[in-house]
Image 1 (spheres, rainbow, N blue to C red):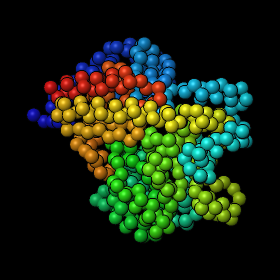
Image 2 (cartoon, rainbow, N blue to C red):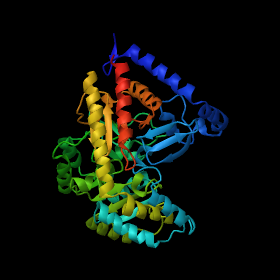
Image 3 (tube, one colour):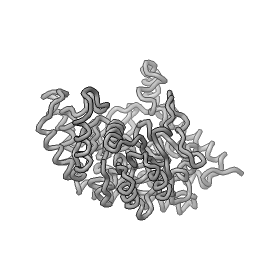
Image 4 (cartoon, rainbow, N blue to C red):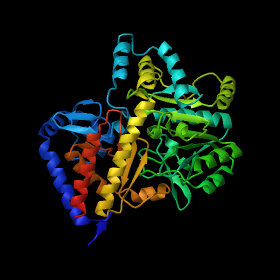
Length: 453
C-alpha cells in the first residue's frame, strides 16, 4: 500500500473522483453559463489564477455578503477564502459600501487630493505607525516602488528575500535556493533576466545565512513577510525578527516588512502587535475593504534620505506610480475601513472565532491520527498535510501536497465551505459566525473520516 500524507493513495483517488462528480452534478447552471460565455476569455478565465481552483469548473457567483457567497445554482457557501485576504473584513462592509456610493457621485479619479486623503494619512499612521505614506493600487506595485526607494537611498542593487516568500508578482522575489545558490524560480513565463543578479535568497529563520549575504555589501533591503504565508505557513523563531533588525542596521541595509497577508495578526498587523521596527512598511489587499488599494510607508529617517536623493535626480520619470493610484475612491474606502471597519473590536471577534477554528481542526486531526498540523496567525488559520511545525521555505515546499489539498478543497466546497485555492488558508472575518466555524469543523471531520477510515 502506498500512502501520501498518511492516506492510502487509492482511497484518495477514489474520494477525489467522487467529490468532483458530486460538485459537477450539483451545478448545471454554472456549467452552462461558463460554456456559454467563457470562450471570449483566454483559457476561459479573465485571470489565469482562477484556473488554480481545484473544482472541475468554477461556480459562478451571484452575490457575496458578509462571510457568505451565493452562486447562480443557489448554493450558499461559507466563505473562508474571502478573496484571498482582499475581503478579510467581509464582503462589502457597510461603511465601505456607503463610502463608495457617496464618492461615486463626486467623481472617480482626478489625480488631486481630497479631504478623505488627508484624513486617511492620519488614520494610517494611527493604525500602523508614524510613516510617510504613498499610495498604490496593489501590494505588488507598493513593493516594487519601495524597492526602488531602497536602491536609490543605499546605492546598492540587490534585495534579500526568503525561500518560499510571497510578495505579489515582483520580479526579484521569484528566486529560490538550489544547493545553497540563488536561482530563478522555475515556471516563470517570459523571464529573460537572471534574477540572481538582482536578488539573493536565504532560508527563513536562518540569521547566519542572512548575515553572510549582507556581509557582501550589495544588499539594499531585506524584504520579508513577518510569517511565511503562501507556502504552508512558517512562523518566525523567537528572536528572528530582532536579529533581522540588528543585521540590517549593522550592514547598512533597509528592513522592509510586507504585511499584506499578516495583517490578520491584529490591529496594525504583525508589526504593531509584535513591536517590529521596519524602515519600510507595506500593506495591501484588505486595507480599503476590498477596493484595490495598497500603501507603502517610509520611516522618517528613510523619508529624509529619499527626499534628498529625489531632489538631485534628473527630471523625468521616476519609475514609480500609476495613473489610477491615489484616486478618490481609494481614499474614501481607505478612510471608511480604517475608521469604522478595521477596529480593535473587529479583531477581537476574529481572534476568538479563529482560535475556535484552529482548536477544532487540530482536535479532528488528533482524533483521526492524521500526520497533519494546524497553524494560526491571528484571524488566519491553516491546516497543513504534514507534521509540524515547519521551520523554513524548503520544509514548507515539501509539506505542500496539491494532490491531497485539491481533494479536500472540493470536498469542503461540496459541504458548503470555501477555502483559499492556493494552499489550505482560511480567514475569519468580523461577519463570520460561530455556526459557520462549526460547520467547517464538522465538514473537515467528515472528510478525514472518509480518508482515514
